[in-house]
Image 1 (tube, rainbow, N blue to C red):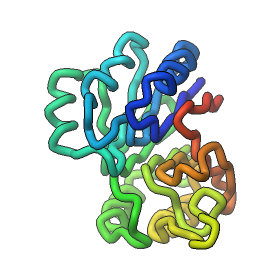
Image 2: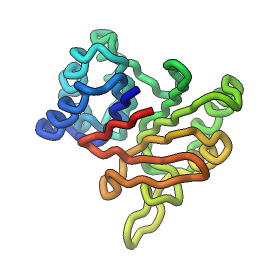
Image 3: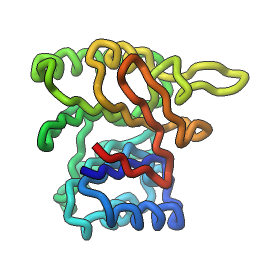
Amino acid sequence: MNILVFVDTHGDKQTLKRVLEKAEKADLIICLGDISSFGKSLGSLLSNFKKFNVPFIFLHGNHEYIGDIKQIIKKHKFIMFLHKSAYQLNDYVFFGYGGGGFSQQDLKFENITKKFKKTINKNSKVILLTHAPPYGTKLDHLPKIGYVGNKSFNKFIKEIQPIYYFCGHIHENQGKVDKIGTTKIINPGPEGKIIKI
């Protein structure tokens, strides 16, 4: 199965065009947020993905608002808004948590994941999706500032050890890859990456 994952296009039409070219080869498409610039033209940007007729998972970034998204998905029913929820496809369980990007701890995330952990077993092939990155990796480190990621995400990764973790938000680290334990973590960047699983 080919998964196309992308993040942080911020309404740039040329970048989105390159994502759409990759989408031709995808069996599943995942947007990790900030496809728009503060929600501008969000509906029309998302509507580009309807024609591919494959599952389309969307998380909001810090540039999108849940109220807007709820209105959009009423019109565009192909969009699977995965914030605070899970989706199973074949043997894989995708768990999503959007928004944020500026806190090192998220108690709402910690409470939700307690419930999620009860729904999976040791054989579950979990893929974690967030907008913001976890703490203490190549994906959240900024020169002269240090680590700016979320420790709640990091703790959850260590407990569950998803097979993959996709995130974005920190533009300086687009395209970077790292590991936490056995979990491969990837910031696919605005042009996206095709991941074969």
